[in-house]
Image (cartoon, rainbow, N blue to C red; front, side, top):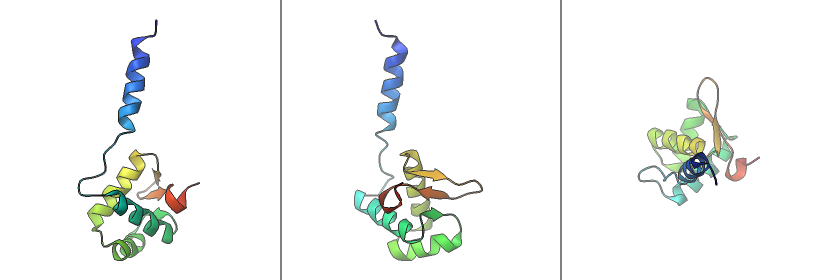
Length: 94
């Protein structure tokens, strides 16, 4: 008989994989975000990175930050020490 912990861990992994997109964000918007981040070198850290992303995508700073958090939650990005994130999806995929 399997331990109840096996089912608990499996269930939590399944739920973690189903993180919904941020409010008001579509799959197409995420693709646009990925392409824009790739065009600036895959790192989003400072104003120098955010301004071109805002111009390319038309997204607000808050939307860009939320999309970065979403990518990190989906293991498609990693936080950078001191702030910011590095994207690991789309053209930035390892």
